Amino acid sequence: MKEAIVQPDLEVNIVDSPIPVPKDDEVVIKVVVSGSNPKDWKRPVWSNTAHNSGDDIAGVVHQVGRNVHEFKPGDRVAEAASIPLAAMTSAMGLYQRFTNLPLPWHATTKSIPLIIYGAASAVGAFAIKLAQLSNIHPLICVAGRGIPFVESLIDKSKGDVILDYREGDDKLVQNLKSAVEKAGGKVEYAFDAVSENGSYVNICKVLDHNTGQLTNVLPVKDSDVIPSSISQSFTMVGAVHASMDKNQFQKETGSKTGNTDFGFVMFRFFGRGLQEGWFSGHPQEVVPGGLAGISSALKNLKDGKASAVKYVFKLDETEGVDRYNTN
Image 1 (cartoon, helix red, strand yellow):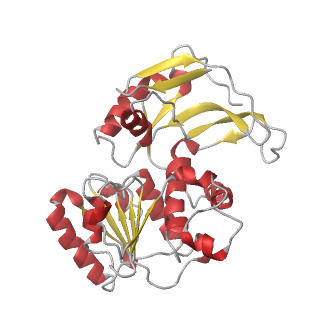
Image 2 (spheres, rainbow, N blue to C red):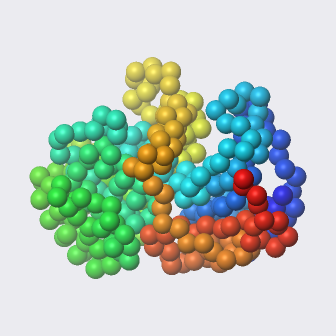
């Protein structure tokens, strides 16, 4: 099989690697389409180490381990090239990092204002979709070039608004304060899907300083700018593989379940939504050349050229790869 190794300069080496054999609880998927995420450029650049970190894929089940019963060879893994990492990051942030936000199957009937900063990103957009399913409103969304896309996701009849960060920090904070006033004068939840370039600084100027909760998708380097009275957390999708969530609330309750169980439920929830049509992936742009197109796509992500779109790659466009038969 072909494997793409991303170098620290974002050049990509395509190498031949053996097809893995699944362990007892694992599934091997024959990838037809692969998606990209910001972490695919951040990890090799920030660590100065070559890396292969592709997480979002669509394809066909090739082989399963002996303990796997839900899947069998030949099963299609559909529309997954734009969903898993971003959607689960959103779900983890909303329902595992925040306390007391209602899950989609227990939608609220009361007003719960929520700030979503970076609303046009895949993580931000999935946060909107999940919030809608939980009937969390009003949503105070911050976006830029992707505003037209975010318009298609929100419900203005329930007070949802979009603010343009391109007007500058001072104007944005002013607009955030106005939106908070219209939302009842108090916002306790903020999902920062950007977590850099002053995003959480702006958020903290309007988030309630007594009961506010803020979650970031990147580690906060200057945490001193966040008031100590605001509960701040870090949302990383990799935590879904942890059997126990280490936050204080599960420690207090002595819960025996954690992120792994949450992920088990949510991924199946996403699947049902796709099947029934009330959940969908992120807009996609196919980058020509298969794996050879990864380098240009990651450079575009790094340079901030992508907005409201996820770059995906068709593996059969890679030189030396036979066209896949998914029948």
